Structures are given as structure tokens and as C-alpha cells.
Length: 353
Image 1 (cartoon, rainbow, N blue to C red):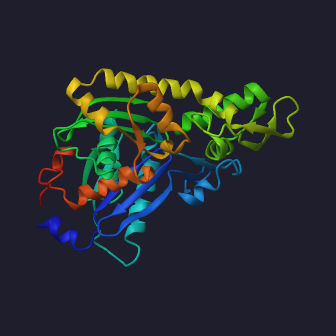
Image 2 (image 1 turned 30 degrees about the vertical axis):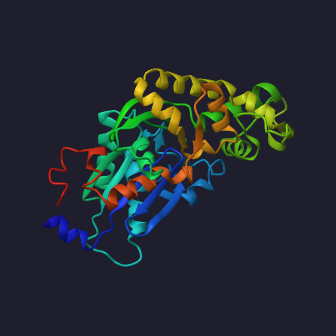
Image 3 (image 1 turned 180 degrees about the vertical axis):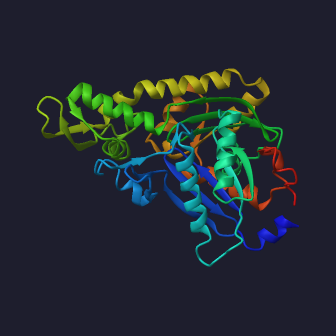
């Protein structure tokens, strides 16, 4: 009865709480928030200065007493209080179109497949403290598979590679559950760090995270393009020898060399998951192919690179970045039918109410 009362004033919300970006889906409205998981803090007062897009603009450009931080590291909460404030901000933004004094949303949140019970509880508690009345946890690759419209509840093998900002999830799914999985901390942020390290070692140039991200997006690729054309970009940073500004010309081959070790580790993990998959499901995967989701999946040539290494068809999901949050939205639309994919919290004793 209480849940029905609150449902009159609240939206059901699906959240993809990512290391790099947080996306929010509202039942009946679609995706309403897609902002960086960044919070700007005033270290003198302890107050939050900005969240999301506004905070992201401050990265690398703040005075000493203001720091722009990511409250999630490798897909899990590293700063509970800041994460709680960020979640509360996004949940409030969903209800801001009118005053809702009794707004207590029912929330589905995605977590990495490798998250521990403690890490899952931290996510659940943060969402509860941010104003949710009920919190359901779903593993992100399962949500992504649902968002990609894969038949995960059927007795067939579905393989998903979810490359986010902090972690990559490689899973095989059948009958609504994960059969084999591997979670590794090689994803978009690692590629950025690889580029920073490469520029330091090869060009004696110090780059910031934002610059490395821009390079990756502009000219990054997993394999050379079909026309063999070289792509170049001008990169500006600080000369480590003189301490003065300097710019160099970087090519797509440089970026591939920078991230090659991380890409090879990712492919080795994919092979390991395939080797641990029952033969019947491997047969299904060879026929159906592997689905790539997550922001890291946008790296040019990545599907072709993985396919050439493991000899199984690989394709991008439609709109890979939003697959997880779209999956949480589908779960919200039919919670009873998809209840088996959820990691049920102990305190949600009557989820059907």
C-alpha cells in the first residue's frame, strides 16, 4: 500500500552508474540524463560546486581549493558520500518538472559483473540515501544484453563484451543468467593512460586526461583502416625537458602502438571466456556472433580486430553507449517478467508491491 502511494508521485528510474558517465532512464520517457560521472568539490568548505557536465568542464582547470573528482573508480564506488550526492542530484533532476513532495522512486541500477557483495551494497545504500524507495541491482552485461534485444531468457548462448570507462565485462549468457564471465580493469580509462604514457616516453610530452581522451576519439583505432591512409592530429602538452608548452604531430599508428598491450590483454580475456564456455553455447555464439557495447566499443576497428583474433563474428550493438541504461528501462517496463535477472536485495522483501 505504501509503495502504491509513493508510485503516484514518483518515476521509476533506471541508472547506468558508470565510471565515466551516468545515464538515467525514466519509465515512459526514455533516457533523460547522460552526463559525466564527475563532481567538483571545494576542499575549503567541503561543499559540492558542480556535478556532471559543469563539473567535467572544470577537469584540469580548477584553482587549488577546487578539485574535480570521479566518485567511481573501476566501476565501483570509491567515495560513498560524493556518489550519494551525485545520485541525489540526478534523481532530483528527473522530478524537477513539478514539485513532488512524496517523490520516492523505484530504481534499477547496473553494476559490473565482478562487483563484490560489499560493492553492491554500497551502490544500493547510496541509491536509498539519495531518495529511492526500492533499489534493484542488475549486472551491467545482463542489462546491456537486454538493451541490445538479445534473447537472454532462451536456452541459447549470447556473448556480450561491455567496454566501459573503468572496466570491461566479458560474459556468456543463457536462460537469464551468466554462464561464464570475466571482469578486467582494461577499458576506456586505461587506453587514455596508455596514450599519456606513450607521449611521455616517446615524445617527452606531458598530456592531461582530457587531451588523451580527445586523441583517442579523434584518431584512435584498433587496426589500420582499409585504405591504409594515415590519420594525424596535433597534440599540445608540456615539454618534460624544458617545462614549456610544445606541440607534436601524432598519427593513428602511434595511438595503436600505445594501446596495443591493453588491446591484446582484452583479446586474451575474450579467448579465456570462450575456452571456458560449454561447447553447445560456443556453437550458438559462433552462429549468432559477439555483441560489443559500452563507450569503449566505439574505438575504430575494434570489432574487426577482435574478430580477426578469435575467429568469431563481432558486431556493435545499436547505440552501444546506452545499451545498459536501455536494458534497465526494459526491466522497469516489465519487472515481474525479468525478475530473474536481478540481484535481489535483502531489504526488498515485497518487490511485487
